[in-house]
Length: 455
Image 1 (cartoon, one colour):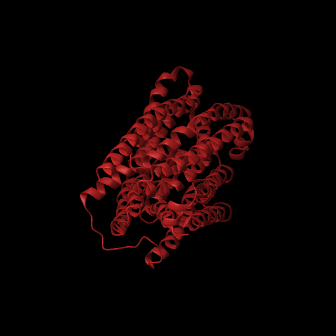
Image 2 (cartoon, one colour):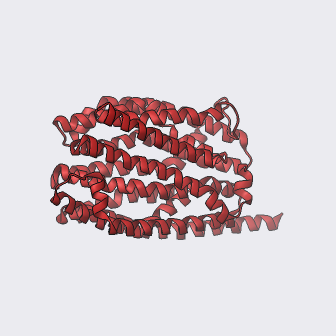
Image 3 (cartoon, helix red, strand yellow):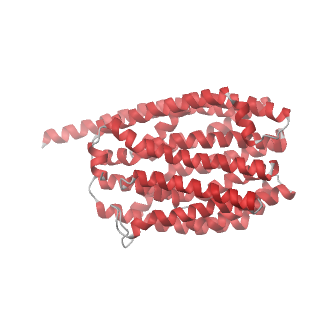
């Protein structure tokens, strides 16, 4: 099905299943691999390597943040341009964005490679623990010029209506990375750097496969002679800011959390936090897969001025996000011990008890997390980056930092409750944002109606 027919004519509920189910499966495959990655490192290399991985992970995600800014930021104006039937402008944005991502990968990767020892040392790590974290981070830094574009090309495939191709690409990446990681760690007995190399190798192979149809001119988006201009760059940065701010602010918060955890509970507390992050890394991609997969359709219809259809699509998104989030809360609350032993089967009784308590508190996060997540995605899709960025920055940094201070007397319990409080505050903020946006849409419709009457 071509993208115009899919986005404009398919009934909203059918469109939701066509777009979101493959998107959720794609993210589920990625989440499974992240889960397997943690299990392999924890079970094969041990608790110190597992803690080192989690200490370095915020910087790894920062490595992808600028690419996400450009990839997500370009996807929205590309979709809207196609909705307005401005194919040349869409192709130019696509071409320029790809070039910008490669250049960003070179610059950010180089900085992180050089600064890795200092960054890890500033976190309070030393000795073998710090050495492992540096090794892990530097592999990602070296690979960034050719791996960071993977998530952007995933969006471009969906814009072209190749939703299943995007799904199979993500599944292939996860399978390849898992097989390579098992080979590198279990068979070759390489260190923690082997885990990073396995992921980067799988990503590189999938980047080559994903761009093949674009280079052959087989898809709606085509490479052209790039024409950079200030308006386009500003538009990309504005639309990508919510994702970028979420990545950067979230990693700053993780770095701060790790520093506080080292003070309150040492390496064990960092490992428990790592388990929580792996659980979140399993659920959040599913939410992201459902909401993000609908963004091209929402943007296309927003560009075409079909506002009732935009609302109908988003209604499906909010409903599905709520169901998934509430089910996740129930599962985490009911089987925290099984989740803990999945990562740290050899942990002592005190560690397991502490992790179980942390997980049960953490599960309450998903009673409200779905609402702010779906609202942020909605605002991004309709080119309202300020409102989306407000939710993103508040959720990832402002609310967690405020709550660290407010809950400080509770020590580690305050850290685990931080997630719950942040989610609740983000939900309240999202209600305010939606009310403001509803008034904005009403004013647009009134202006269009007045213009139609004049004609």
